[in-house]
Length: 197
Image: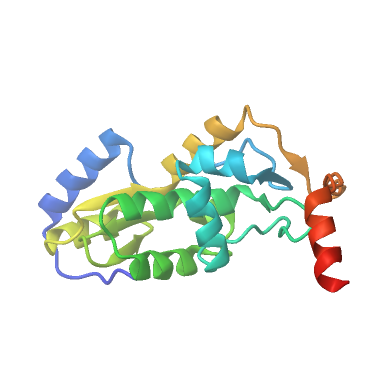
């Protein structure tokens, strides 16, 4: 995940940095807007991250990205904005052909980092490994070594999530209501009684 610097030619580097700055794709992004003390239900997380509910459930069960606001045993699970960011990053990396093991390593590396830190990261991949870049110099170094065919600026992903989740109802973390009582399945209750006697 870490990017090591190497020898570089200053002219090439300046040209690449100027082009990158014009495209607005690298690092140092500001994130604000959505409150960090709310949670989003599974369907909202799926829609914002661009994944299916089946993927969400599988990734939660395998520990790739679990709901950090509220786990769902008796209540519906709630995902935080950073959780949904990790879901979207995992989806984007999966779509580019990165192995699930490398995605797991990348997500583990990013997990628990504050939002401003996440927004300043650009993930680069050569199709096999995933690298973290926090400055345009690191991106240029990586590309000059012939690596980095795919780049994902997390600040841009964060803004996409803010737009997608800005219209979705969120639930407050402090006073989260308990899940409504589930209707009683009369047939299942009778079967259980019959089996137990």
